[in-house]
Image 1 (tube, rainbow, N blue to C red):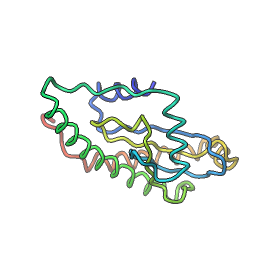
Image 2 (cartoon, rainbow, N blue to C red):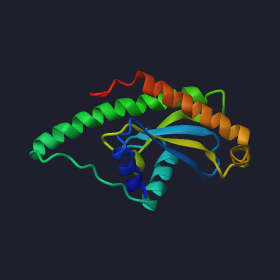
Image 3 (cartoon, rainbow, N blue to C red):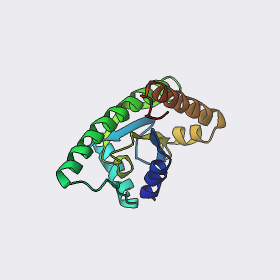
Image 4 (cartoon, helix red, strand yellow):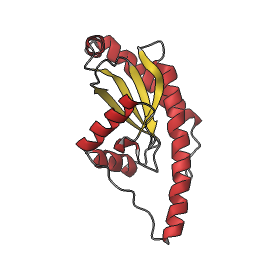
Length: 170
């Protein structure tokens, strides 16, 4: 379940959360990267997020015992930093995938996917292609294509981590 995935990331003090997908959407072909937004960037993104969100539920974040107004401030600060990180990994991922695999137009998209709602971990959903498109399905079945996807994702993650500020005590 989505909540368990987020908790898994939190328990390991994850610097980043990537959710990898190969969904279905009539007429769609190509990879894309999604970051969180309550307003979807387009109708297809809204429909994908709605379908994914119905399939599962997210876990909550445990905050310290502080007054509610302090919690709101802490959450706001975390969300700002998390969104900056999510946008950075999205840019790096789109750049790494570009030239390696076909991309949807406007490859960095936004939608309210539950899996992206962790306020404390920069998150992105990578749509690696659509199983509903014969060319994408065929590509995803080829080991060389999957290796190219993996290499591009690794490049993006390494770039993200290289630019991340050092954690206290590290």
